[in-house]
Image: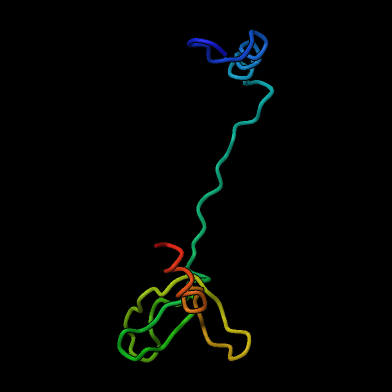
Length: 96
């Protein structure tokens, strides 16, 4: 490419033109909707410290819980644990 040319050759320019104007053979692109992260987000109650996976309201205090981060259930104790709890120091050091 030299100067102000957008395409490397006349063949590439013609191909791009055909792709832009040939709507009949091409299906429209659909973007999938965003998914909710609530199902795998760990929440913690500010009053009692109870943690929950996917539930934003504390069952004991009946108040909304604070978001801790993405996580899941611990395989050994079956308690909700976030990725930040597991890799907290490594993540904070990597960001510096």
